[in-house]
Amino acid sequence: MRGRTSGRTCDRNLRPDLGGKQASSGRTVVRVAGGSGGFPSRSVWRRPELRWVDVLVAAALVAGLYGLLRLAPSLNAPFLPDQAPATVSTDPSNLPFYAVRSLLRMFVALIASVLFTFLYASAAARMRRAEKVLLPILDILQSVPILGFLSITVTAFINLFPGSTLGLECASIFAIFTSMAWNMTFAFYYSLVSQPRELDEAARVMRLTKWQRFWRLDMPSGMIPLVWNGMMSFGGAWFFLAASESISVLNHRYALPGIGSYAATAIGDGDLDQVGIAIGVMVVMVIGVNVLFWRPMTAWSERFRVEESESADRPRSVVLDLLRRSSLPELAARPLRPLGLALDRGMRVFGLAEHPLARPATRERTGDVFFAGAVTVVVVFGAWKAFDYVHTTVGLGEFGHAFALGAATFARVLVLLVAATAAWVPVGVWIGMNPKVTRFAQPVVQVLASFPANFLFPFATAAFVALGISLNLGSVLLMALGAQWYILFNVIAGASAIPSDLREAMTGFQVRGRLRWRAFILPAIFPYYVTGGITAAGGAWNASIVAEVVDYGSHHLSATGLGSYIADATGTGTFPKILVGVSVMSVYVVALNRLLWRRLYRLSETRYAL
Image (tube, rainbow, N blue to C red; front, side, top):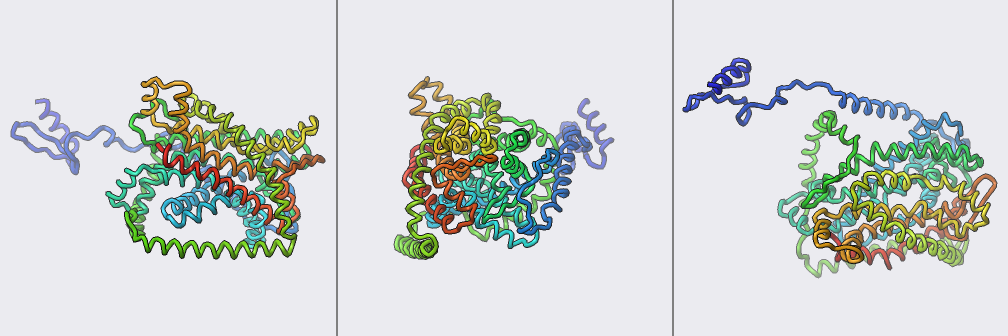
């Protein structure tokens, strides 16, 4: 009786949508039109309503779009190189505008770095012959200092957008891009080459296209290291913000509105009060970016972790929780789904994501010979033209002088790597293997790593002058402030990526002390440490440009090294010396990578990949 009454009531109230069917037992079965049977849940019939979360997310989107529209006219302001200002106003009331301009450059460079990472790392990992060229090029690009890129690109971008500040903006963004992209590319490349073989076989069995394999396998498997290294690269880019916004090349200085140029102007004036204000604003910016962007990204990336037992305490983010509770992201993504399906169909022309299991040996060797010959011709021709240019300008003897200066900088880099490894590996393991500690320590580490250490150089310069410390020793500390965090962040990422079932197994077998470190922890974090080590070494070489030459007011300190050599040549616009300095630095970095880091990479791939 209860079933029939309920059926009649629903049939009477919802007659257009429901229909009754008399079963043999006499009960009335109510079905939803187009449904699978049974009563719909109450939420199906609930009318959509506007919630406070949706209002908050919509307000944030509107505020962001409004800010971009207000900034757009200033990005294309009139610009004449001979009349461009060399400094910016140090009025604190301009700091909000400067901060927004700097953040816009940083995020545009981050987007460009992610796109470059996907393309370059995928090509290096999936194309055997291309890998032999792309990885050495990446080593060289990582070794080229920021000022080396600026000395070439500033003039090119200014000529590309004549009469507009857009050219200078592009040069600044490109300089920031060069401080982000290489680390992210190395991290994503390693995630691709260390994928488990069973996943590769599954992609072949399911006959995924190359496009589908990238978005369904490659990108998810590399998301955690990409996010962590992207966060680290973003923090490292703050270090070069002053050099990217207050550009000094070819005996000219161009200043773009930004927090970096504000700090550079205050440092040049010797005004410690203004430097302190810039430091305070930078702390607020770093914390804000961490809370509103990187913290949600790290929590979101946990969905791509592959392990049999889920961690009991995963990273969380209030911002991410708000976005998940809001219906606006789903509404915004809905129109894009047909585009995604169309791309899936359109990218089938590039073929399936499978490699021939066996290639003809003769064809393989012939292709390698032709490929190696073409690359050799290009390299020899470029080297011959470079040597001829140096020979006719400053003489080939300049290379010997640069190599001697490079040995001094190389010694500082080695000291930094050894000290940073000894100091931060234990700390990184402790933070990464304790999720509760990670929740509180990660924002602190992010602030320390993201804070541009060169903002502290005026105070360090004053201390060096007061204590009589030579910059030949002090530059090691200044370089460490900008490079040591790569090791710490990668170790934290490695320790946090250890599957929970392995941790539980070690605890269950009561593996402790030195045996736990030797047999479990160090092998597990070794691949991540190698990524952090190679990036820290490259970052240290780059940091030597600003760490071996320090200016504060009337004080000028200079250390003996390749960094100061390149900085002086860039400031005076001496292209032959810039070429010599960049070439010698590239030789040092590539040689170190080939003799040490690449061998450690291979070791991590063959023995220590989880």
